[in-house]
Structure formats: C-alpha cells, structure tokens
Image 1 (cartoon, rainbow, N blue to C red):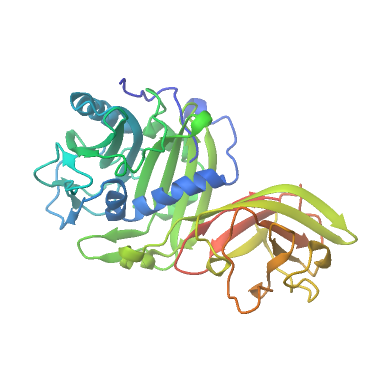
Image 2 (image 1 turned 135 degrees about the vertical axis):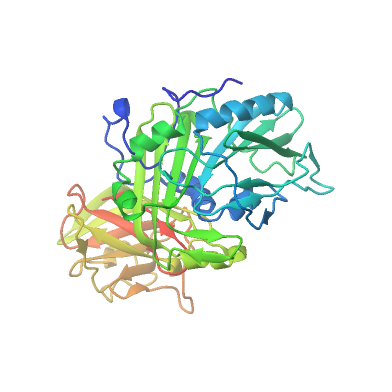
Length: 430
C-alpha cells in the first residue's frame, strides 16, 4: 500500500484552518448528521484516550504515566508511511481508520490481550509511553497515531501505533465476531495530510485557539462512501488524566469540531461549541455519555395566517431523548430569539394545524402520523404523552418551528444544546 501524501487527496468533514490553495471555498455552517454521528466517537477519543483505546482495541489498558519519552509529534503522512511498512510485514491488509491523538498529559499504552473467542497474535510484550503534547495541538501532528487494518481473507483486524519515530504492532485480532470496524470501507492509497487539514481549519477554529493555548486534539480519517475520504477533527479543553482519574475543564468546557474532504482538503462543516461540554462527566468513564448528534434538515416551509412553519427531518444518535437537550434560534447576527409560550391548543395528540404562532417561536415534535408528541418553548419541553417525562427521538419523527415572522431564507439558525451531563450537538440554517 502506498502512503498518502500531504498534497491533493481525499477528505471530508471537520473544522478548517486555511492553507494556500484550499481557502477558496466557504465551509458549511454546521456539521451534517452523518458527520456528527461519526464524530461522536472522536469526541470521546479526544477527551479521554482510555476510552479511545478501549473502543478501538479490546483488551488495552492504561498504566500510570512514566517520566515521558523523547518522542515527537508527527503528521499522518509521516506516521502512515511507518505503519504501512509494519502492516505489509504482517500481511495486515487494507487501512480502514487512522486516528491521531494529542493530549495535555502523558500516559502508557497497554498491549492487546484478547480472549479465547477473539485471539490476538503478534502482540506486544510490554507497554510504551505516549508523551504529553508540548505545543501545537492544532498543527495536525499527533503524539499518538493508531491505524486499523483489515484482512478480509483472514477475517482479522490489525492495530498499529506510531509514536514519533517509533512504530508498535499492537496485534492482530481474529474472528468474524471480533472485528469491530468491518463495516468501514478501506481508505484510498492517498489523501490529504492531517497538517494540511489543520491549516485549512485554522480560521474557523480561531476563537478556540485564542482561548486555549493548550488543549487536547484528535484528527481522524475514514472513508465516507461515495463521498471519498473524510477528516474528522476535534479540539477540546476537556481532558481526563488516567493517572489521577481527574477530569479537567470544568462543567462548561469548550469543544471545536470540524469535517473536511480528504481529497480536496475543503472544509465541509464545523461547530464551535463554547461552554457546551460537561468535562465533569468524564470522572466516571464507565458511564461516559458524550457525543449525541441531532441533524435537523429543513425540507419545507409554509404559512397559515400570521403563523410560519419550518418543517425539519430529524436524524439523531441512538438513545437521544428530549430530556437531554434544548433548542435555540439565533438571527443572522447571532442574537438569540426568545422562545414563546406554547399555545394551549397545541397539545399532545393534535395535528400541526392546531399549533398557531405565539410571540416569538416554539418547536413542535410530530410522530409519523403527524400528531403532536411534544413541544418546546419558553418553559422547555412539554405537551408529552400522559405519565411520560421524555420522548426518545427516532427517524420517523419531524420537528416544526412555529414563528410569528419569516425565518426561512433570512439567516436564522436553529441549534440543539445539551441540558444534562451529555453533550448534544446539531444546528441548521432555517
């Protein structure tokens, strides 16, 4: 397999800073539902490497940090060249996923153990140290790169780590029921380097970079079907030190997410989420619940007298409920619009036609038959089914924004935000 170069190639959706030839096109205002679903994993990864390791590499354990190592951060194009050599030597197959992580703390990475059902071969005999990021978390270089390869003939996955100039073959996991990333499509032989993507997203990440001289970062690239390779990027001041078992960043941490096309380097979306990450939720990693995504795609708008309706299709992460998020509308200059008191006639079980405008805006959640199953206004969520406290979102539901002025086409943006320990992201221009 040939190594990707830092020139042309593929990529998809993450925050942009702009390098030379890639700054021309304007990025999308928000991330797509598919990008958010994929980036949910990346959010967890950037916040706590222990969860990343446990998710990608069954049996990996983190040990107390040592004095560190002289290793330096490297780009994806440098790291993948080393990883490809190790993959070729072990007949590891095609590259499925590349993830680069830089953290504000040092830690040791454990070796694969496996079990009788999912045996691991060629595993390490000792742990290795990943140093803390000493600067430039947004550069696209990473202190740790993890590469997952798939061999469809042998039905196995191999994981390779690159730490600076050192390459570690973590092992090969075998068994059809044990390969966790088999649903992914192999990456192409070339795609835009992480450092090029970092440069492209820099302008969009400007506020976060100014606010945080040091932070944690993750750069990941996956194949996004017919769209080609896509870069997923996350910066956050949330972190979890596996040594002290302490979460840092406060209850209102900051998070910057972005996606970029891996072939052209063009930024396809970004979200700058100030104060929307509950870092304290990381204290108990066994119940870590971050990264819910709510994609709200406008598909039609209508009027009835002085009432204006913006109908949206919903795509959400599994398990997202109304108890976990709220909604906000801002105008083209970013000023929040006050939600209205939901009219009494707009109640559980009625049709959209009973929901007329109030003073401001409110949201109506409809089921597959067009009946109201919940509303969101100045008092939060209400008008739910009797004896229920929340609704779990499904793809069959529809969200309608009811307003007393025209939002569609005038730059108004609808966003979701978390109201509990879980991070919920999602926005769309009405």
